[in-house]
Image (cartoon, rainbow, N blue to C red; front, side):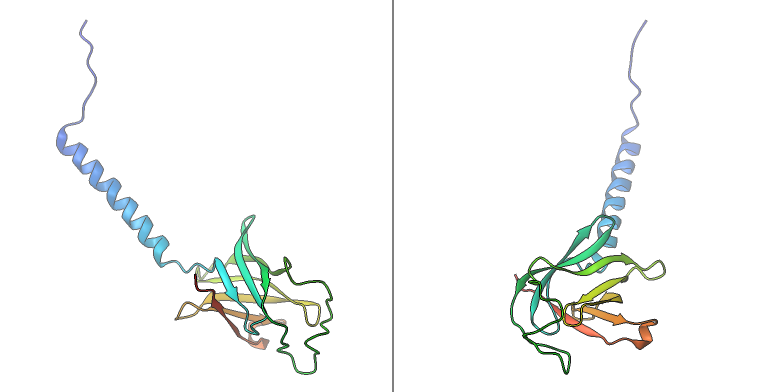
Length: 153
């Protein structure tokens, strides 16, 4: 009994290759256009360098370097924050997850070492690639926007 393997006609093989290449390119293009906040950032105060990276199913931001000790809050001593621990290694951005309705925005919490409080926070990338954070109490309307700059390689 003769044995033979089924072979696709050459035309179909080429069509399958074209379809696979198109799928790969469209997947790459979708990832290329999705804003990505991962990386290293300088906080709005210029005090810390924070690395935003995956932590479980979310994104977190950990202080990787102390750059200065300037306070952004009026009435708070720059040299005497409420939280006396070293900021090095401290998690500043906590459990950020993509918004269900808007994939360019994330929601999580931000820790303020100056007053020792944690706030709800929105995070997105601005038009020039800056990280835009809006800590708030209750509703984002009652928040204050801060802009972090990406660390240049």
